Amino acid sequence: MLSSWNDTLHFCRGLGVYCSRRHVNRVIRLNLFSYGLVGSLSPHIGNLAFLRTTVLQTNSFRGKAPSEIYHLFHLRVLFHSNDSFQGTAPTNLTHCSELRELNLVDKKLEDKILEELGSLSKLRTLGLANNNLIGRIPASLGKLSSLTLLLVGDNNLEGSILEELGITTIERIQLGINRLTSTIPSSLYNLSNMRDIKLGANQLEGSLSLDISVAFPHLSQLVLAENRFTGPVPSSLSNASMLEDC
Image (cartoon, rainbow, N blue to C red):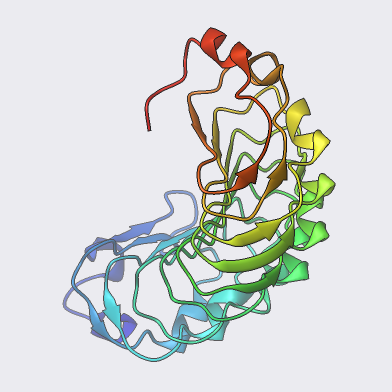
């Protein structure tokens, strides 16, 4: 892709390329969403030291994403969903300490969720859904104190939902279509900002809190089907005025 930049067209005027007004000729954003791109991505992307946003989703790239992209210290947004890159999840994202949004949805990743993701202290969105991820959800994700959106549904994850995931900033948590067991941790019922809970198609047990609508006053979506819950459906759900049909 970067090899197409040449002397006839300044790269700052290329499609999907945005340069800084403050720092002359410094690329800060690549938005190549659904451009129908094919081929490989040059490792020289790692030379774009000021790059903050890279959106590569819905293209047909070959091979693996160049590891150099994960050494960009200013990177804040990384959207790589459905981009056809092959391979495992990136293992060196700890260099991207400014990262706010990480979207690796629908990439057929076959690996574990890395403990190192917990070091991305500024992360607000973590999208790993619709892959083939295995193992347990690492407790280190509980360190993501700014996280508002956690999407890890439609994988092969197992084990319990950890108490550590009771991050007070979370608004949407989607863990459905996995192999999660045990009960819903009590810490999740303390998340008053929660709007979207999707835990369906797991092996969760126990009963639901009778005060679920009090715990989640802003709840708009709740999906719990295809589990092993026992006990009554909380009557307080009738008071959840924002709840939508799913």
